[in-house]
Image 1 (cartoon, rainbow, N blue to C red):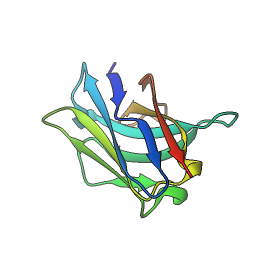
Image 2: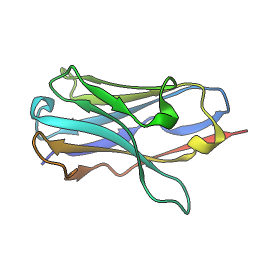
Image 3: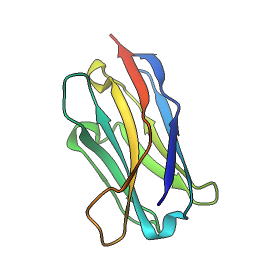
Image 4: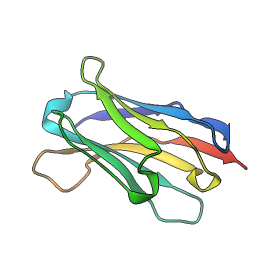
Length: 119
């Protein structure tokens, strides 16, 4: 199992930027897919972006394309989410998660970090 700890959330004005980090321990990235999800108050958790641990592949939810960028630093075992042009509707708790290559289930989750965008 991979242990995940998010950081970097906070309060930002609409149009601003934040970078979330997710530090992983217990395993290296190469055999995993890593993703960001978010959950707004009163709403279900939704997928934001995903990256292959060995590199070469990313995917994004339509509502963040062109604004958010997922990346990783394998040497630091850290996942990132660069969020630009933030909107009030991006307000949510953001979670990082991991799944083994070949598995569809995200088996490890962080505790979440709050992002609040003021309009």
